[in-house]
Image (cartoon, rainbow, N blue to C red; front, side):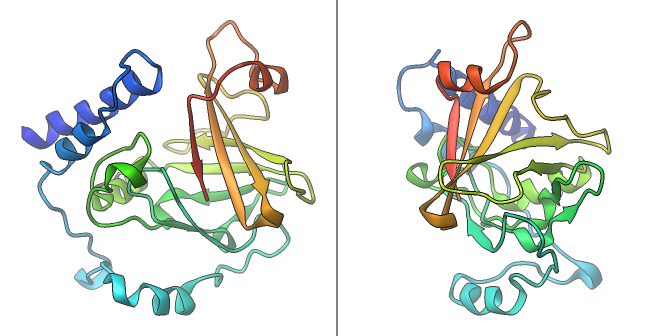
Length: 221
């Protein structure tokens, strides 16, 4: 019962703060609430423990990073998330290219996450839940993300981002629904910023909307 209440409360609080309905910084409350969730140990095939100790992460990344095989796409390399809850890093070599749209797709459950709840200064607006919950839920929901990118990316240029749950078709460019997402390149590709705008049903989620409305949330790669 406690876990279910916390799981519901954390995203509700995130929306209240992100939309400006709550003007105070309640991220410490998000964090404390998320830490009430019982611990959950992720297991792989053969009941193998999927936890990598902090001191072994660098060697682990050298062993498994950029081994996915995708090369012919503007997004390359391994990037750490900043201000996106417990999500750890994303390896763009795991992208699968879609021949019809020329976009790159990735399974969110192929990303990594920290085992515990992030501290407020690192977690953005959340979700403030243990990463060991986040990845299995993403897999159960078959949560995938698609990047519509130009053939080459320069600083200040962006990829449009769409998503899919439970095997449903990806949104097409500027068919963002309630959210509009841009992933913009900076510093020669050393950094990307993903901006999110909330789009009401009567608005068109195009470049004009992004330029004339404030972002709901941003995080860094």
